[in-house]
Length: 409
Ligand SMILES: Cc1ncc(COP(=O)(O)O)c(C=O)c1O
Image 1 (cartoon, rainbow, N blue to C red):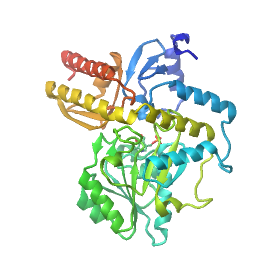
Image 2: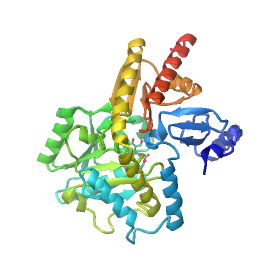
Image 3: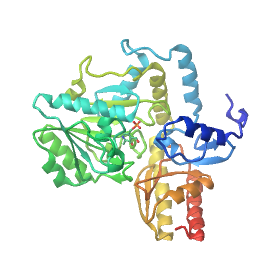
Image 4: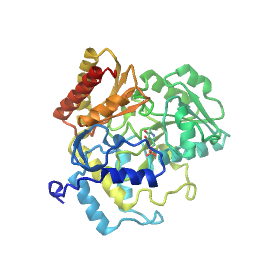
């Protein structure tokens, strides 16, 4: 279908908002925009206003909106077979698992439908791995985010996600991210795994220090504890390498992936190596929809596009370009405390809450969001161009000036 020829479908924003408020559980504080369509790095709302999408569905739409090759695969595969149970072999699923293993440290993959589910699989593998010696504790990091299921929120080191939901499954402990001594002291004979995001996303775009990751790997190997990297947000090219762990020269035993893998369709993957990859036996774990024919075909196409169009390299190059531009803004505005992150996973920490900046930028045509209240987060699609970045930075600067003019900041 030719996107340009679709009717504009204007109006009705109020109705969508009213019905959402009336019929949806209020789990999100929603922004008053109805996104109606997207193409590449741009989206349009229901009124026809266009935005540069620098959040891309929180890192999901890595190859841009409505990629024609993805649309083609969805169309063709949906005519052939949308679903069949994992009771049977699925060709695209096998091919996808093989490809992910070739790209990474892993030997085998388990497929599910989301990042939280991928982490649930990792938790179950770790628990079964440790069961022989009575080791069940998992050590996670403060400021981490691993999902919203009871186990994964229990493993998330941020009070705002945890409150109301205790008690969690027992055996989860927390240490400060990048604190080697705390980690060393926390590992006991009851520990089966250590989990961390090499770059924390929801926690404020915080990078693991190389010496911390190296020490974690060494400690885990010495104490026969599994090292799990949650690359749900930072994986699959986002940081300028296929996987963020590759910046550190350190491999995990388990890695979880999700967000961009099926270009916007729901998917999660838990990858493991060696004997860890064979911990689960038939009946231990499963997922009705996990790695079905449609989603696996789309994910294969996503990886093909990433390789063909050199999008991992593009993330590295454009990330450097973008970061330079953000540093220039930091020089101009003293309220910018820090610019950090890798590739196209970048954060800008402000002295004040970022919401007014996010709102003003949106009014001026740029979509970004804020984490940890004061950190503006940028997760543009990996197809982003220098012109897109120039435009985004100019809107950001303009937004700062507007808010300064109003005395808001
Ligand atoms: C690092 C990390 N892990 C896990 C999750 C949970 O993924 P999902 O929302 O797909 O369950 C997220 C989501 O933002 C994430 O950023």
